[in-house]
Image 1 (tube, one colour):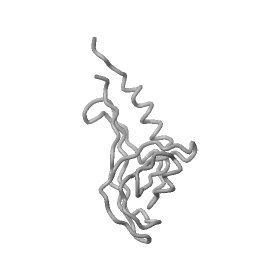
Image 2: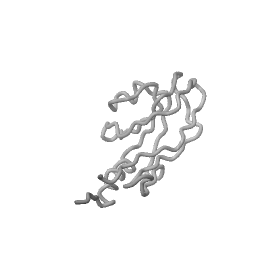
Image 3: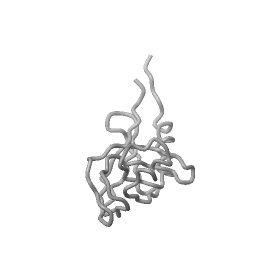
Image 4: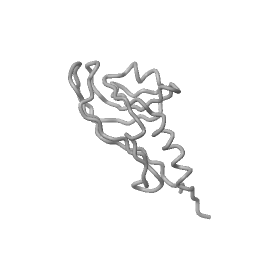
Length: 123
């Protein structure tokens, strides 16, 4: 018997990210909690629903693409290794991805490229 899931079900999770993830944080280590977004923060960009795009997945299912942000002010010098999304209203860590490791310096800026999270169809 084949397995399937309606795209609307997958979109519920992705829409939650789009609606509630209002912080994008460049981090010096992998955050595993909402509090660690602040602990490891090198730079931060406020996010709104328009910064996210829902679409069919590249492999299957559905995806959310986080829009690129250019010229984000660096608050703390360090080596960027991760980018995390958080929901300040719920104090919740929503998604974390890796980024190209790079040294960034206080007073400078960093560009955050677009990235995506995909939920595949069941197999």
